Image (tube, rainbow, N blue to C red):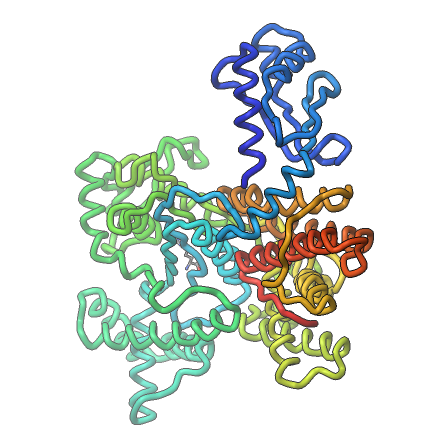
Length: 576
Ligand code: ARG
């Protein structure tokens, strides 16, 4: 049930019946205060102006035609011409019963699309670090949300697996294998990369060999390909451990690295030239874009092939967008990449559109995000000023969560405690990120994210376990809750309305890729449940009907919290 959509439809019908144009906007919104009803129609003023009518007069005409029998208990005009809509408690009760019984809690089915989501995208022969956290976490929440809604989601891990550094890395892998006489385990990727670089800088023979390997690798040489593949495999095996620890839904099959597009690049450059979009300029191949000006005010040149024949990150992203449309058959493509790459993407996509590789009907969306900052407001680094490895960050989260939950649960068995600390610690890192608007930078703060108060993972996980405890105390399994919902109290009604707004919330998150909207919703829901639980006794309710009804509200609250947290990739726990 999408109440906002239902009311919009009804109000717009009434507006048209009252003489408004067919494309009038009813502007139905959730109202901020219960005294104005659950929803408000704010569109009257703008339409009245267009029609040359007095807004209040139009509002009165609209209300005459507004058919909300059985849905609203009261409709009133407020201020200059707002329409306040109060929902009928019996209608709300019926909707709650329907939602509980429905698959997917009654969320309106969508027209399924094929949606490619580009996220995480670490680099080969490097360890994942804090710079990959936001893309991985927010992208995964989007993937979960869109697949829950019924879309076909293709997770695309655009791994940095190509570039001239691979000559050096292959040569170094070879050197190590020779010295160690056989297969080696590459545990420390950072160290490996550093040593390879040092050897390259210090040993001219090595450097020469490395440069030779770059050429051979690009030429498809079998030995170099095999060594390259080994580096990719080792890296992605390590990254998979991190994804699994973080409960991120990426798998090895989702790796679609930069190298995937290599074979397309020469054809694209030739095609852009043939189309008159690309030209030779000082030996390189360049696309000049009028949309972007350089500092002299001239059209900006985007290089797609260098003088030495090499291709660029932009060339790959042009090919990649084309591939996602042509081969993956995407209806929509979403990129979770930090905001510093915005101009890069815009340039690549401007070329993609001009060349006709992806039609305008298929959106290419950059869901940009800001940086992760330390408490001092500067880029988040180790004390020594180095990048923070993601695996270290996760270790610390679990360590801190272990201290926290063992204090609260001194008698919990060790294995249960370990599982709980893991859910809380990993959940805290993820939720802290998800709950902030993704577009701004955000300050990483252990104390805030692990607090039991406020919009945090521990609070939400605790809130969920508290709802479940109602059933334990009642001695009733969730499946045994029967009867009908009967809403009488103000707080029951407020909780019911919020529960039914899950549909509107997830629809918004799916459209905008803004998981913080889901977090804010769930946090608010948990607060409304607390108020309800305090003022509307469940186990000591005045009669069995009321008790069953309140248990039903508790049940839908539990299901909604769990589902909402699931779409965010946050574990729920039964007890904490
Ligand atoms: N590997 C890149 C980086 O670490 C991110 C890739 C994002 N995806 C893309 N299609 N460009 O910056």
